[in-house]
Image (cartoon, rainbow, N blue to C red; front, top):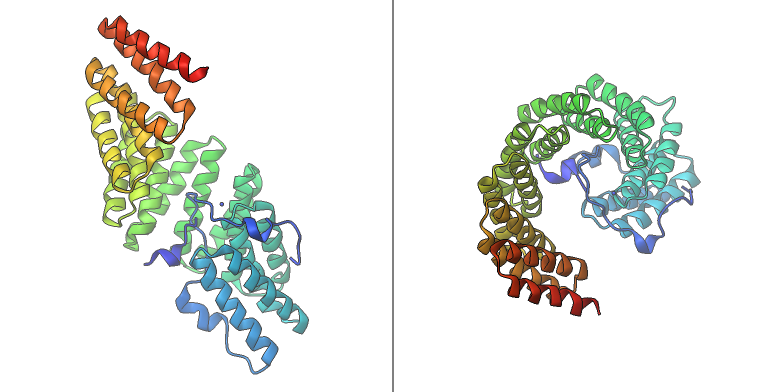
Length: 366
């Protein structure tokens, strides 16, 4: 199953939306419901009317643009096709356009706009038997309410969505609904319920043999166990996640999970293992030229080396971090690196060098 089928791109005639020039895809752990490209011929049959034909073409185009992450273009195409479908009174096609407008605005982080579009879609489907479209719209509303921290409403809509996925026996969408309910319960502090939903999601996604979906769910399960301070469980899921992320060449995802693995190992007092994970992350960061992740990794490595009492190695990492922070003009990280260098030198009894770093802090603050 392809990434485009899952689409994790993952944060109205209605005015509550981001200005078109500011639309930008927001990354998140949500799995969104949407039609896959193979079903679009069925969703959008060819019509004889010129207006309907043009509107259907725009709808197909908007869907493809959204899947490619071209949110500004998708929004324009979908708004145009919505107007044409409204002009001819085609309620079914209006509902389809509104649902995809909900997805585009959700992808851009315009959660109020996503709710507005999706609610309009649902209002057109009240007496309609199109359960797949209802499922899609309910998912967008529930996910948007989660980001607005209205957890009760998010659960209400996502549970309705889950019921439809079960009614349709749509396992791929069940994975998404269960995963997203888990995210809401985690956000509300109910980690046990979050884990229960995401464990169900994991079982189904493994049955489907979908590595991309499994990677997302494993990461979310690791995060939930981490939030419960159950670091061994978190590490078990994160390690499985990293293996999948590497196999899928999801380097940035692997980098984030390696950071979490390092932090969890550090929290357990296993500093040597923490260093191993931080070093792996550092290597990845340098491969993809991600300066921010590189700077964080160097700082984490320094702290872990200090915890092992290896101050000389810690100083080496802190000095590398200092140079990098200065090159990217990050004053906060530069001052943190200088403070850590000063403390490490004091621990070694090298007071002269500690004073040099102290002066470095002063001169940079002047």
